[in-house]
Image (cartoon, rainbow, N blue to C red; front, side):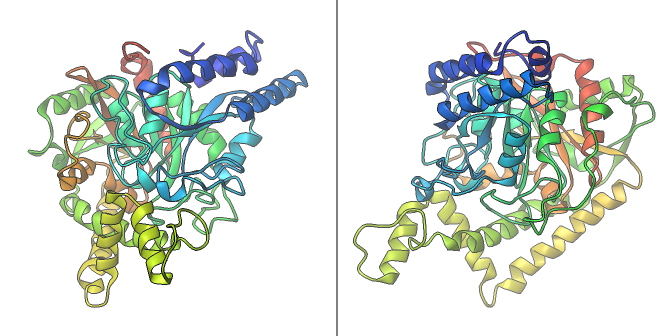
Length: 483
């Protein structure tokens, strides 16, 4: 049962081959047995899961249907879930039980999805390795000595290890696509505003976007269908019709114009990954796609711009965690200043503190124009590059990451080295574009991903290309040894 995709589960439930309750019990047992070596979950919600599974079975017995009705999933632990700990991977929120459901959680619950638990993550989604979590690092099921990527590493590791078929995740600078690449999954960052951020605890509000992590593009289409849509509670939500993503998977790629940016293949890219990307290009050419070299000239400025804008927004968003209203509070504060200092000093980890300091500095008087304003101007140039490129091509293709997953602890002493691993993913967040990573092969036994980018609200096009690619390759079917 644990090897089934979301699509296969939907068919099995519809054909009454098994019940949601039976499947849920199998997966909960599997998580209990295998997750101690991965550390992919922060909280298991057995009682809720079995309750939701029984309810889904009853709905099916009454004639209801739906791809997510009775399907087991998990939520990244920054989506608020009513009455259940929502920690953001931080000591700061270790004791926080959300009083309401995030829109994404509510929508998926209404569709009949079964919540198995909350997955581990980099603290407040700040990291590319899932090593900054207060609950400990997550291990990559393909090699337990390596990172699974971040910040959605818990969701990625759990799905890759077949503990469940799919999970929600979020992407601020690549935090869905990079873990997908590192764990042989398909991960989709939708257009900014496509999925509601209400109840999704913020890191950088103009960059954060929720999306699906699964083994196949077909499964991502199913999960995104349940997540996407306008939400009046979220001022950044876009009132744009949500297409039937599954219905668009089988379109022909004949004549599809794919752009490959020359800037993607510089000195920083592992040549073995470059070769796998070229193989993917050839595969898509066989399916009728037309390849064209393009240029994204401002890509080189994206990382410094991102690492000014994101920390600036984080310093503002995280100012609410002050030891007064909710979250961690220090013991016996001497006065208000002591309460603030010690509560935040004890509650936040080193990486979060580093980014808050950088952000506060960039926004301070005398430096706002020099750093933050300049970074926003670069952001506009990055967006303009994409707009120009999409006048020539339909899709942009390249590597998801410059290197395969690194060893646990390898970049802890050099945060900038970890930041540089986001070079191919952060541009989509700066511009607000949809992006997808799909399995493209292996280097030294570790998975590699190919990234696809599309114009605004063209998630269906990304899923269509990925699905057709997956019908003609088998990378996505490989399972890590022992799982």
